[in-house]
Image (cartoon, rainbow over all chains, first blue to last red; front, side, top):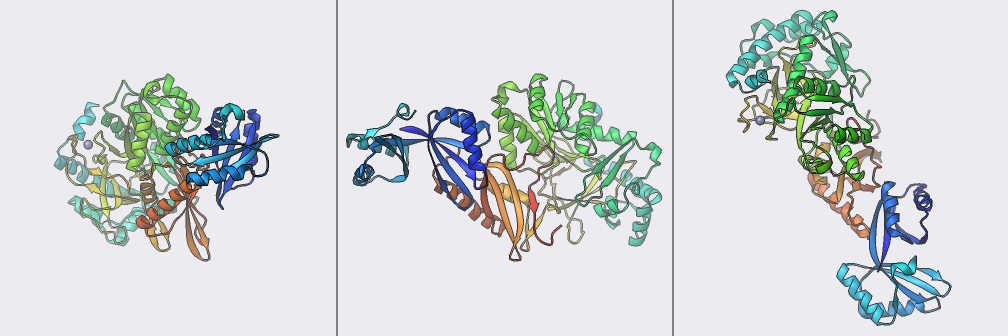
Length: 142
Length: 435
Ligand SMILES: [Zn+2]
């Protein structure tokens, strides 16, 4: 499991740019940034090299930011890589809140999954690992 | 303070005797020295020389804020200006202020009245009072200041603003009593905690005397927990003096009126009829010994009630309940009366929300639209969007039940609701045809 930073943002002009600038000035390197938005606000999910510092920096700058444990699974960056993982999850009958992927290096991609509930999440992570997938740690991301 | 202790426990019939004497003098003084009262008493057929009981005062006509405005600046002064030592003005949203004048005697009474707050907090010469109400025309700053000095406290005249400096002074000078608006106290608390301070260890606060805006019991509990002290509510208004007209004692069960200086009635705001103790209505005040600007039956527009019965603290002065809001804070939304405090009460049942909010009123297709902007409390897990949606829906449903008016809830980013240093602005009215 790795730490994802989640930030609440109002849908107003320039907020996302300001957020990215705040992290850039703190020299934090983002590996991934995805936005889930509604008409009024958005939730920005960030994977970066130093989540604790990102959280401190954002909180000090008056952003509402929290840290969330998510499962990060390394899959081969090739056709069908994600399909095999999803098939496995289907088999495990696991309730996934959301997921997204980003590419780690040339031949590896990272699938991020949010599984609700701490117990369910660690049980699911173990099942995924037992099925032969590589569960990534914070060091693998940084 | 022994002078105060005696008067605060005087049997109530003796207080009433003081009040009757004072009311008689006030109405005559007003009639003979203030052109407005000469005209209004005559027009109402009220004879100021024929008051025999406190009930007789109900025959006198009311004084309204508009009357004071119409006679700006000196029309309500009952003494020669050479006797007036200080002036305060209340801010008017319409532009014209109301003016209060103070003679030496009036200033002394003011100090004594506010000093009762220190007495109620079991304080005195050993206390360090930090006043961060604004100093100036607003009565908050100097009123608290005179009270601190009269009570023998070491009084620090900080005025409002520069929150980090307030916190430094509070810590380094060992402030024990804090005086400011409740919303500013909350801002100080939040800022101190964000600076990494632990109010329990870093401050010596014992009590806060907070007024000039209504605050809910939940807000109070929150503030008391954050700053590890006890919060006493103080009431007052420029038109009758300033803060100190009534102050809560350590029992926190109503605010003791300074009945030796003010006579209070509760009226039905629609009919003007005097209501019995216990019933909610508009507070009406007659000054008993004010020299410069005495008022007769001044309509405060504040909604409260007289709490029947005696206070557990043993003091005999009657208590008013904590304010339900002002008649002019009351919003009429789609024909329904709504007080911002009702919204605050609902919000407080949801720990996911912070205390900061603003109500925005707009017109959409000729109908009133209410939007409540709220901030999430630190620590609320909003990673899944449905949690934010649940929060919004739950609050909207609760508001609908409590107010009978639909309110759209909008969650906003932290600090996007302005932190005030004076009175918090809770309502933004952008409706067509209003203001
Ligand atoms: Zn009491």
